[in-house]
Image 1 (cartoon, rainbow, N blue to C red):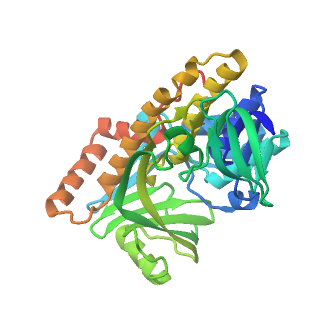
Image 2 (cartoon, rainbow, N blue to C red):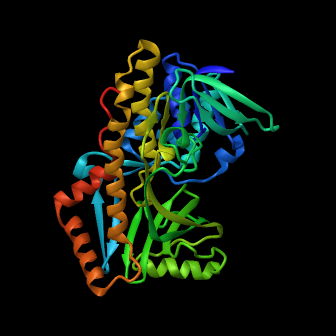
Image 3 (cartoon, one colour):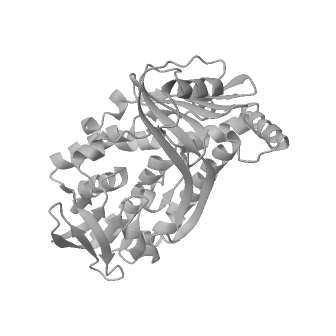
Length: 391
């Protein structure tokens, strides 16, 4: 089969790109190895930058981000027995929204199907060929195991951190700049009301914890752990005791824990974001530690840049924006990598950290919360830098 743009991956990046291209009259086929139920049912993080919210809201009634999402005008930092609030609205006039990723995916899937999008679930991409030609091909297998090909004018890899398309771009599935951190997050989902109106980042003598939310009925909480921690090694009571110890002065609302997982920390940026008529977006191009809440937001920024480039290429036969895609996207990607690393290193305790390291860390935290300039930098980065003009 053939199409103008073949998109591998029905996550936020792939679906948003198909929506934006569709607005310009550019047809696409989107494939994903998962089922619709699996995509919509996997509960994921959802702190959205203001720019991301504005992009989703531009879909009109198809998006529930403004009606269901919750605006947060700040976050709290707890350390050294004190509580400090970073007021985003007062510092930079911007906010973030709590809107879990799977809810955004429900909106995007419904909108694309209503628009007649060729969206195929249960289809596994095996590889991408002829990237340097003007008709690259996606080699795929459908849910019944039958092989087929999609020939396109352009192929986009939006297929996550284990991207198949990455090999066609970089020559290797692991070709990139990589860092793995010596700690992870033990995360839980619990049926409980919010413990706080906004997110709490806590650096305590007992270790790091993050108190977050998913909905008025479901809360997401994390504490720092070993990357090889066994999720079944602790009882519910031990988990709650660990969390409570790491957020002194805040009474946590407890409830049944219905999901446990260990989230490893990795930073990655592919060596190349584009080769010929194949490009990478989202987690296929980069991953960041979750501390700075940049994952989905960075994917949306990639998509906006690539959307402009593809419109110029496919509607005007102008390759200039496409030639600049990687350079333009990488400016924001590396800023997000730095911010995510900075937040992570400032709030977590590294293995073998000395008393000097701990006291220096407290000095860094005070330099942020006691300085309007320091707080404004954090607020600016957390709520999101301006998106590319004209996208």
